[in-house]
Length: 483
Ligand code: NAD
Image (cartoon, rainbow, N blue to C red):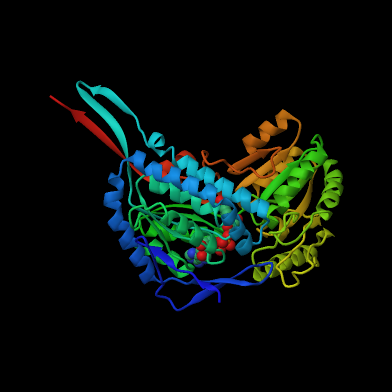
């Protein structure tokens, strides 16, 4: 029988008060892996009480000691690295190498949090007036929560929890009900740290649990990662309820390929960006714009390289592309491909008919290429979130930039070129938060904030890096005179 997942509240594993459960399947084998409770307002209320009660004591734990917990957490994660990576494959469908990459990136965020004693320091100035000194101190702000997506079930929660907690806050995580098992496992590891009860809490569930977090007066702030329509709801609900919020949304990432680019090397890179994690990355390449005579060469090289990708079960080491997350996602992606064809795009590589031996019912979609896409088509504008790359033509660099800047998303954009002038102008002119130059996936490392503009981000302070320290702390200005 599949495991019924539990919440983790106040240092204890507890059953949800809900009698509604969401099934979690392995998208390749269709095996029922677990049943995830659709937690209630009451469950969230219990978690907030536990986190609030823990806060006063936890903020007084010296920051060096708080950081020590993260050093130990990192060691435990390294020891259990492979187990966690395999869980990610089983519940999400990506390949084992992609899962390892994800867990590695997550550990980098834990590493970043060990630097909080340095990062929380602040500045001061003597003699702002005669005999008067002024300093800024940073203090933890209270209870924070994160609401996270299915596509990086191990990594995205680690963008938030380690830094929030090491800054002296207490924390509630609500992972995606599509991929909740990685976090059930991660909280078993957190449990081994013997943190004071209530410092870290886990609430499984969907929309109700999210709403309960956002409406609860005991929650100070919310970090969100997911699709843009939900990010907008999160931003509006949190601000209406007087909370801090950072809401990272969806994407439609463009890649411009100049005629002077090294085509073979560029395509290898673009291929990874378009089909890595079966296109289910907020930094996935969705549209490649070939400038001038780059278009035909890009088209031919892409079709050649993409056709040879091996689609299969993520736990088999030679698999290059796994499944999408669910059958529902497969249907949605295939409908979008059909829409592109109906709009006049030419399907030059069709992943809809892919078959994987031994996994007949798996949610596989093979690499797909739509050529001759134009800016007004739905497939050029809306996020497909699957292994579908659209190809577009532009006559000049300026036209390519114009096409990119018309998108209502602004998560990432890349250029492939060997000309520094184009690279500089691209960085300067393109309205996207993460820019790649000869890099297909422009993913900021843990010490840099994760960019995102327009409908790809709602809020002020982004996740990761120095922004996360700002987000998770309150600044207090102290003005002193001692006579
Ligand atoms: P999603 O928006 O459906 O769900 C994200 C989270 O919000 C989940 O925990 C879900 O339970 C919760 N949720 C869903 N509907 C809700 C509602 N109406 N009210 C409150 N909470 C709700 O996203 P997903 O399908 O899990 O993830 C894929 C999306 O995430 C893609 O759009 C992708 O681009 C985006 N993403 C963005 C980034 C980034 O950094 N910008 C990173 C990863 C993924």
